[in-house]
Structures are given as structure tokens and as C-alpha cells.
Image 1 (cartoon, rainbow, N blue to C red):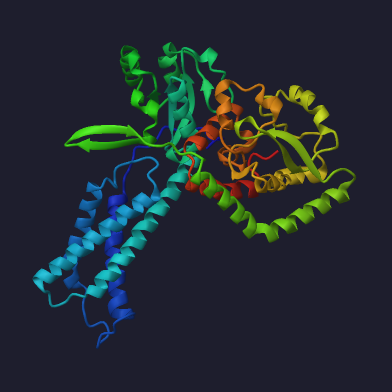
Image 2: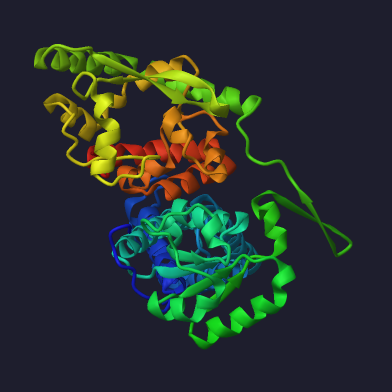
Length: 480
């Protein structure tokens, strides 16, 4: 998506109700074959003597009840980012209810031809087919969005704390299909942003109409406080006249609704704030245990690769095999950061000059075709094997497998205050910005992704990042 120009979203053609209905009928047909022709579990006296026709009324009841239940559960409403497990639970619940209804009707009417075993076959096959259809649907949708089809171009109005939260969520969760083109804010000169990469500073609030036209904006997300309600209403009118959709983040979202708990008191809504995801106490111990367990499982392969890489560096010429550097960890604490040496000796002496020469951001410099990199080092960097000794830091408890990459002290000196939020957790070998483009991600966007990770940490998110890291490394995306 990063290198694709998004197009305006296509009108949503929801074919899933019809596909589900067809798959439900197919499930009955396959169940009939399994029960009466294959006779997998309970053989009948004569093969294929029972026709399918008596089952058609039950098929109709089954299909209609599935459709009614799924519509009532909101399965066919377009919801961005719906977890697959939630969708699967809805599918399973619907099949269970429809199956019980059909069996209840068979008990009431006592038909001459009805097999409860066939009904169980149909339920099991339905779950498999419907769940598989959702997997295919997600794959097709992901493929379309990777080509820029069905993506909404989003303009965020207001780039303070809430606006930044909106931006980092859109950057971190690209599967939602949002492409933030930039932001508007009257205080943009004081935000410390750089107009690089995807998210750009597009000026003050009075430029809304011009930016909607020039950037082909589909959706406006307004994150201003309600104290500016007159201005907000005016902007909503402006956006709608320009043909853009409008969404408003109310003041309540300053709390981050991911952590808001809603109860009712005889119909009166009661809202409270639950605990934020954090890496302290038991959560920290669980993350640490997972790190050590994964390293232990992979230790034979790690030892073999360590030996081969060390041999390759030694055969290329003189110099140390390992390279260590002071890095800034959690809470600003310094530690020795280990890598395989991929550059010539004393390479750090030339760093400042190369950063200026290649016009790089000194807070996150990534130099293409760096002349300091050795022949073996270039291969190590492309495959990310130069970072394998980071495992030493993980074993020492200075790093984790997943987390923000640790910066150097001189990079931290150039940070704006909001950039320092990425130092609030233990750093890692891989993280959201690596699986979102690595060196191709500008510094400000990298910080947004790291802050999103800190605010939304979970074991599931760590597992997702680790799984996404493998193809990124294999296909060398964003590696210099």
C-alpha cells in the first residue's frame, strides 16, 4: 500500500448473504452424500435408497434461519477491522441455532425421512465452508487494498494527542483500508512534524476545502475538542459540500475508548475507564517467559547460524566479528547493543558526514548504498542476520523480541517531547515499523507506530508482529 496510489473506494457490493445461502445448500448436499452414499459412520441396509427431495423444506428453513440470525447479529454490516475470531463465533452460533431449529421441527412433525446424523454432517460442513469463505473474502480484500482498490483517502483535522492517536492507528492497521494523506492544524508549526512520507502537514484548518479537492480526500476525521463546536459544524458543512464523508472523534475519545467500560443502571449508561494495556507486573513476566521459551526452542538453529556468519566475517578479512554500540533503552537507560559487524573498522567516524551528504534525518538515518558496508555486511543487512546478536541483549533482559528499536544517545538528543514516548517500554528486535516498511518508514511515522504498540500491547499483537516479520525479512522489504 505504501507505494500504491489509492483510488476512491468501490461501492460495497455485499454478496456474502447469497454466498452463505449457496454454501448452506452445498453443505446439505455434501452431508447427504456422506450419510447415504459414503455411509461413513452408520451404514444403511440399502445404498442410496433415500431421495434428497424430502430434505428440501428443512434446507429452506436452515438457510432462512441462518440469514435472519446473521443479519440480526450484524454479520453483513460493513465493519472495518472486525476480528476473525468474532466473525467465526457468530458463524458457529448461527449454525448451531439453525441446526437446533431444524431438529426441533423434525421432532414436532415426525417425518418419515429424516437423519439426525445427516443434520450434524450439514452443520459441521457449514461451519467449514462459511469460515473458509471468510478467509477467502479477507484475502481478496487484502489483495485489492494492496493495489489501492477500496482504500479511503483520509484527512485528519487536528494533530494534537487524539489526532496523533488516529494517525498511528491507521498506519499500524493498514488492513482497515485507510490511507491518511496528512493533517490540518492551526498549531502545525509547533508540532515538530516533517513533511515526509505518507503523513504530511497540509497547513491550517482554513485550508480544508482546498485540501479536500487537491488530495482527493474521501473521509475527514475531526479530532478537535467540543469547545470548538461552531468551527466543527462549519467544517462538517464544508466537507459535505466537497463530497467527503465526515467522522468526528468526541472529547470522550481523549480517554481512548479501547479502555472505556460501559455499564447500565436501569437503562442509564454508566461509563468508566478500565486499565490500559501495560508491560508491568504479570504482563512483563509473561512477555519475558515467551522470549526465553522461543529462544530456547530455536537455539540449535541459532547456534548454527551464529557459527556460519562468524566464519564468513572472519574469512573476509581482519576486524572484530561483533560490533557493540551504546543504545537508549526503556526509560532512557543506556546499554551495550550487540550486532554482527557489517561495516569497515571505525565506520562511526564517517557517519555524520554521510548523513549530511545523503540528506538523511539524523534521528533515523538510513543510507542507501552506504560505502562503509563490507561485502559480507551488505548480505547480512539484506537478510537482517547482522541483528542476530541482539539475542544476547534479549537474554540479558535489556531487550525483547518485539518492541521499538533502541535509538542511539545522539538521536535521542534531537527528539521532540512526544517522540520520547517510544522510550516508555522495553525495546525489541522487531516491531510495528519494521513490518510496516522498515527503512522506508519516515521517522515521525515510526514513532507513531511505536506509540501505538505501547498503548495497545498484547500477546496477540506480539505474535502477529513476529509472524509478519518472517516474510518481510525473506523478501528483504525496506532493508538497506
